[in-house]
Image (tube, rainbow, N blue to C red; front, side, top):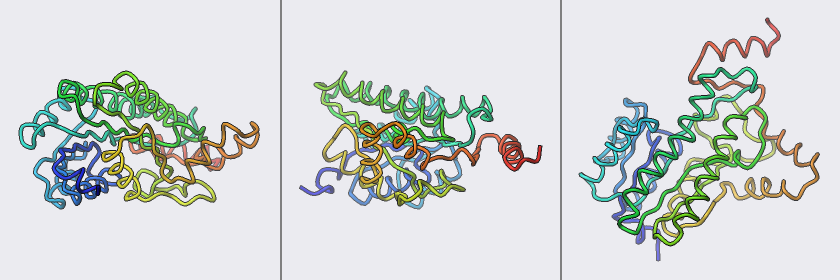
Length: 278
């Protein structure tokens, strides 16, 4: 049975769908015949991307707003039908030394990456459980399993997503509703702009994650790592001596960059200190 045979006609909602992994996933699932709706906090960009893909439903979506998120799903169901799949993709990845991370950046990471995923999972479950079918796919990260210098809060947020998803998978294992995680390595999107990714490893492409999502819709599984090699390396840490494991973690380190899309003043201050100008 082909992916198109399984996915065609399914109603799929993707958060953070205006660019990067979300946009690539929307395009791939649309091409497979799904009825795709995308939401994104960037209203101008989501309108542009939705029109480009020829989608019927797209618009502004703040995943930390319960009323707004619920209203978005209601609109999708009114216009396209019951939601079959929710892809919780929205996330941010400010990077830099933990002691220099502004409090509002810490809160924003946790609000979007953890609360937004928990909220989306709950709202989807409330719609899917009475029907006895549906799939929630949470875009986590290999950073949720690997200690990564410069990404302390981000790693914590993605570890929380993995724990949440695995728990929901067990809690509702006989319900007909599936909960799955995708764990990308560094992926060539705007999210990692200014970094070079992990030393010695090829970055993933957004299309790689999109393909993993499509395969999970067709055949739900607990977790899928992208790339496979990066996933194997991260898993191998559990069997390595401590020093080797920590060396691998340092290969992923981003402690000397600060990708702060929330607070540009903090970014400049951090970069000044890093250059020893203070």
